[in-house]
Amino acid sequence: THEYETILVERRGRTGLITLNRPKALNALNLQVMNDVVDAARQLDRDPDIGCLVLTGSAKAFAAGADIKEMQPRGYMDMYVSDWFTAWDQFAAVRKPTVAAVSGYALGGGCELAMMCDILLAADTARFGQPEIKLGVIPGIGGSQRLTRAVGKAKAMDLCLTGRMMDAEEAERAGLVSRVVPAGELLDTAMEVAGTVAGMSAPVAMMAKESVARSFETTLTEGVRFERRLFHATFATEDQKEGMAAFVEKRDPEFRHR
Ligand code: CAA
Image 1 (cartoon, rainbow, N blue to C red):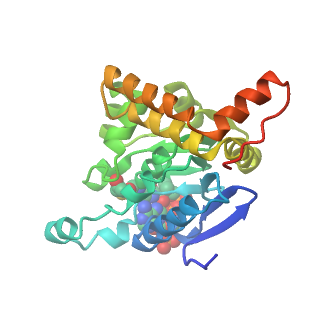
Image 2: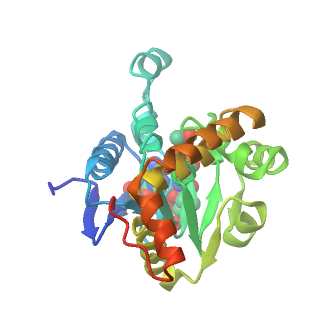
């Protein structure tokens, strides 16, 4: 794999691990980080030897937000014409399952990036927030939308309007994260979860992801229909044959497409 300036990329088995690595700025997400993460994620997404992606930061910060110093001098024309942040949508569009492993600060763009991932795991040291309002701006990488869908209006309004931080326990209670683990176990847990997902049939895992993701986009009736069609489609895969045969024969499945 090629070297990036602001991230580390590793392949461990069928899991691709992306580690944000701008320690001096608490992993603030500047344009270089955006381009590096998007490039690495797209490459891993295309790689048939990869079944799941993990995105993590440092112990102190997953990411403390978009880079404030980079944005400070800019004006409306510049932000609008360059469509600032738009490349992040390509990370959200990754088709393979993604896991965020969050330790320390996940603020602003950091929280938004974590929320783009499919499974959000938090260390007990994690702190989430959308503090943009304190800078005179609002979230710009989907925070007001994904946070509201994840935790509901009450907490989303509270966080976006006061800029306060939410600790890991509150984030789990609110449904933002699926598990909280001791900080020292975060990466191992994330790699284990990713390994489990990567051991499934890759196309079927993609369909499961696509189906859950669809619930954010559509009505219940349309979502259920979408799910049903993909469910039917799994019966066109060899992995459905294998998965069900393995159950009947009381053995572990050997999925072909992984
Ligand atoms: N952008 C640029 N630099 C940042 C940064 C950011 N978001 N967050 C931290 N840094 C830099 C600091 O400027 C500091 O650099 P120097 O050593 O050169 O001074 C370095 O990282 C270490 O940070 P602190 O000294 O502030 O560390 P701390 O432990 O005292 O505080 C913190 C940690 C509470 C997270 C604090 O750094 C902070 O409040 N950061 C900004 C959080 C924020 O407002 N995020 C939202 C950004 S806007 C956004 O994300 C828009 C969007 O919707 C995408």
